[in-house]
Length: 106
Image 1 (cartoon, rainbow, N blue to C red):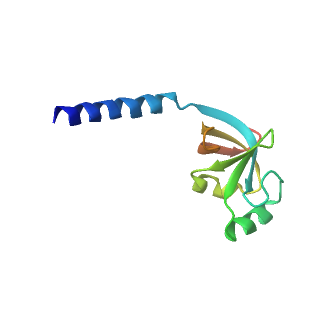
Image 2 (cartoon, rainbow, N blue to C red):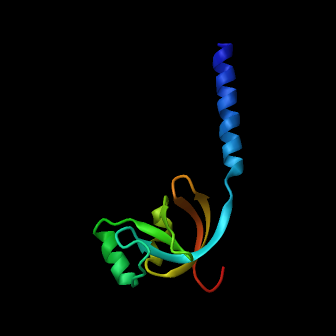
Image 3 (cartoon, rainbow, N blue to C red):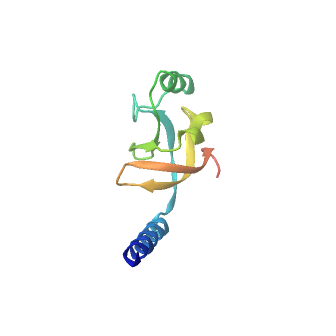
């Protein structure tokens, strides 16, 4: 029983430490879709591709394509140039969008 309590305590501490290392970043780019990647298209084109099964993606200012793990946050921004505040996971090449606005002010 003591071993189980120790394992649970260590697991909790590890999870807490991992959560503390995640940082948010302010990024500028646009919302595209996974089929065309870093090629910028109109909102109508991006919407059409997402409706056909492509995933929304964030393309940063260096044309790096990032998967978005909470795609519902960007539904109103397909094809738009945006600024996001996001938690970046470089290991999985994905972001979690905390805030998003059309480029021009945040």
